[in-house]
Structures are given as C-alpha cells and as structure tokens.
Amino acid sequence: MKARFNQWFPVRTGEYGLVLTLGFILFANYAAMGITKVISVSGFLSQVKDHYILLVWAVDMVLLVLATGIQSLIVDRFDRVKLVAGVLLIFFALYAILPFAFFTKFIPLSISYTLIYLLNDQQWRFFPVIFWILVSDIYDPGTGRRVMPVIGVFAFLGTIVGLGIAALDARLNFGPPKLLLLNASIFFLAFLLCRMGLRKVKIGVSTNTQVSMKESLNEGWEFIKTVPAFAYLALGMLATGSVMTILLYDTLSDAKLNLGAGFQSFYANYNLLIAIVSIFIQSLSAEIIERVSLKRSFFVQPLMMTFSTILNFFIPGYVSSAFSQGVARVTYDTVDLSARKAFQALVPNEKRGRVSMFIDSYLPSAGTILGSLLTFGVISAGLAFGFPRDEYALVYLGLGIAIALVAVFSAFKVYKTYEQSLLSWQLKRRTRAASVLDKLDFGKDDD
Image (cartoon, rainbow, N blue to C red; front, side):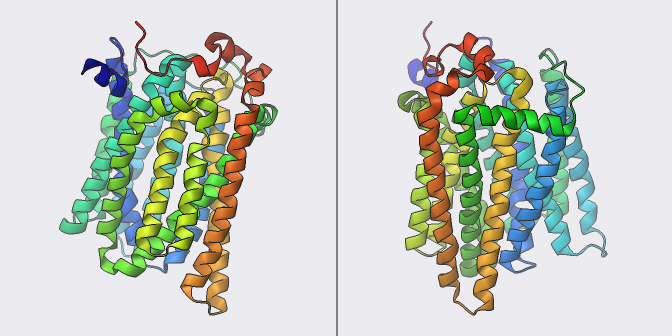
C-alpha cells in the first residue's frame, strides 16, 4: 500500500509544505479559469455566429503575443516569487472590475463575454508559464521530474471545481457578475498564500537587467535555434497550436448545432470529464516518461493528435469531435507538458524564462492564429460558394491532418537530435549537474 501511494504521490518528507503551497496556487488559477471558460464561450456563442469565435481566438493570440513580449522582458529580471504574486494580484483586480460590464447598457453582451474570454485565455497561457518557471527554479531537475506531476494534479483538481460551479450555473443561473466576483476572491486568497507560503523561497535573479525587449526575444530565439532538439520542439508546438484550434472549433460548432440551449451544460460536463481523465493520466505521467524515455515521450501527443484528427475526419458529429479534441487535449496537458517542463529544466536559469516563453506561449499562440485564420477562411469560402457545412468541415479537418503530421515529424527529429542537443554548450551548466537526463530519478524511492 505504501509503495503504491509513493508511486502515485512521490513526495518525500520535508517536501509536503512547499508542494501543497504551490499546488494550491495552481489550483486557484485553474478553478477560476474553469468557471469563466464555460460562461464566456457559451455566452459568446449565444450572441453571434459560431465561426466568429475564430476571429476572437486570433485577436486573443495577438494580444497574448504582445503580453508575452513584456513578460519575456521581466521574467528573468525579477524575483519570480514576487512576479507570481504580482500576477495573482492583477488578476484579482481585473475580475473585481469586470462585473461592471454587465451593469451598464453601453456595453453589448457580446462584448462583455468577449472580454471575459480574452481574460480567461490570457490567464490560461500567461500564468502557467511563469508558474512553471518558478517551480523549475525551486527544484533541481531530478526532484522536479518527481514532484512536477504531483503539483500538476492540482491544476486538474481546480479545473474540476471550476467546471462543477459552471455546470451548476447552467442549472441555477447564478449569473456572470457573481461568478466573476467569486474568481476575484479566489485570486486574492491565492495571492495571500503566495506571499505567506513562499516567503522563505530565495531564487537568484539574472544580473543582466539592461536587456531590451528585442534583445531579450533574440536571446531566447537564438537559444532555440542553436539547440536542435529545441528547434524541432518549437516547430512541433507551432503545429500543435494549429491542430488543437481546428479540433476545438469543430467540437464547439458541432455541439452548438446539435444541442442548442443545452450547450452550456454539455460544455461544462465535457470539460469536467476531460479534467477527471487528465488527473488519472497526470498521475501516470512520470512513469510513462520513465518507461518510454524522455526523448520518446515527445511522440505521445503528436501521434494521439493525428489519430484524433483522422477519426474526426471520417466520423462526423459532436460526439466524435468531442472525443477527438478531448484525447488531444488530455495528452497535451499531461504527458506532453511534463516532458516539456522536464526538458526545459536543463536550460540555464538566466535563459529558461525566455526559452519557455517561446516554447509554451509564442509558438502555440502563433499556431492558434494560423489555425483560426485557415479555418475561418475555409468556412467563409464555403459559405460564399454555398457549400454544405459537412463539405467545408472536411476541408479544414484535412488541413488539420496535414499539420498534425508535421508535429509527428518534429517529434521524430527531437528524438534523433536528443543526444546531440545534450552536448550543446547552451545546456552545459545544467547538464553538468544533471548528468544524462534519461538517468534522472522519476519518482522511485531509492532511499
């Protein structure tokens, strides 16, 4: 029994306090996101034609790229504990202000729901990046490989709580203002915990504080270009962002068409199921990566994503599209995330933030923009020429299959260049301490 518990929860004596503190902060972020994710999407789709959400996604990603540019400038300059606390405080303030958008007649409901969606998605992309950079700084690579999946489980627990509240809202109709104020309260509690629970954590800050934004971005990009495995991983993230966007749109469009007023309840329960399955897969992520090795673990998500897109192409309907998107999302948020974070832990501290920004934010965002515009273009052309929905849907899903194959190719190249990349001078500082990455402890207690 003890061995089984240690396998599922490989935290050792003296580590519980910090792990639980970090876990609750992550829990708070994802609980708030779970609430607003459902109400923003269902609210927006109730006000406008469904394919216009693709333009919202594209604009959202442009805003995110701009925000990430600022983030990449400060992430390696300031104390990351204070940075995380500051972001929590900003989200608290924004969620406390947003309810007023529903109390004025001058702001259309479509705009109010768009604002909620934009904040939710910035939160989804922005906060995890700086949070996981902080975690990578706190733990050495070996310990991080063991405790990161445990901390990651709290994201799914928070998502379950948030989606559960959103599902209740579909029945009891609490209303957006009350839910937004609840989010503000959640973020304020997370801010207090961050200030108190992480006050003893000390992390070194880069002494190079006079780097411009352009120089900061160039430095991160130069690192990626000169380490082959990171370059191919970057290409894979670009392709993944595009395919995941296509799959998500097809799910939302099919569900809205078939379910009508029952969409919010479906969407909340659907995301709830994804979160529950993700908890189970996340608990196995460390063992999966150990068994297949880190360099092979980058195949998991692209292969599952390709399979899902092909399935969606040949089997129409919201059940098939929901299953396909769910499988791709679960593997992206569990095994793939853990593998990426483990690999990024080898990047020197003074560069890790900027490299993580490209891998986890810039490139998926660019992929989302590409996928959104391609899909919107296909749908607009289909409507203009009077093609049936089923026909133009096959066109954008076909594009999704082609792009998914690019992600598989990228994973293959990561595998082929893995050992060569570990010898790069860019990773020298981290690999000296870590030795060979595949030999690091994945959670088996060897005391």
